Image 1 (cartoon, helix red, strand yellow):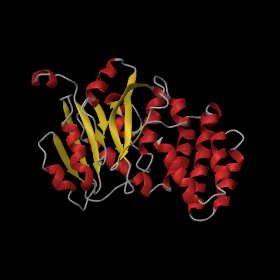
Image 2: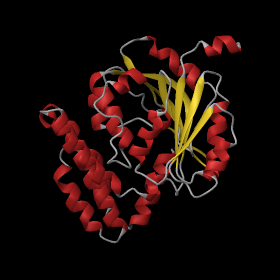
Image 3: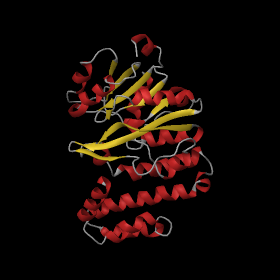
Image 4: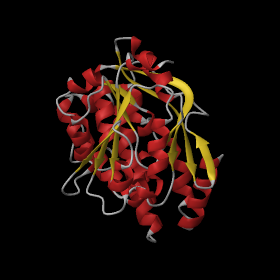
Length: 311
């Protein structure tokens, strides 16, 4: 597409939040510059990094707009700081250790021609330095349209795949909730799903990097705590939620107990897993396997889970 045609396309603001992300940063930024869709800007919010992240980001041209905070703040608050500087009609997200494939924006933006669509996502690869681990939606295709119930009970989005309509974001009472560090995007996308529709591109157009230094693994103990906060918030925001979505709320509570139990099992208390899961076994059959496997050493169970996820 010629330069003039590219400039007539809607502007996409690519939100990149960074805290000491120098190791994979160039690869992430370069994947945006490699997009076949040409009308984008990067809003780069440096969350007071102490490594070379800032120097790397400032080495790019004016399409990357660099901002730096004076101190490190929670991720939800940092994403809001980046969003304040965004000028695009559409907003996309790329963390500094993830990658986009070249056709991502070109295939997603046309899905917004339907006015009711407020968010478009795509398939993605989970990968490590050793190669591809799995394709997120290879086994089961995700729902589209009105997905609030599905998303509440079984959250299925991956941050690097999402593009949202700026107008839908601004219609919310708040953007990212600054109290959350681990599930700030879950909270936001659920609120968008409550009143809008999602669409999906059935192609893997991004890659989510699995590594031990990522917050997903380093701060995993925060997930159940923040989900409890989310349930409290949504019960106030949407009166009658626990009645209308009882099955989905029970799934969240069971998952919280499972993850808390895993942490205790890892620390040598396997009986705690069984105590936490026992009230949910009648309705949440998926936890029968970890319940009985908790009689084994945790390291063996963890290896079985890793092997299954690679399948």
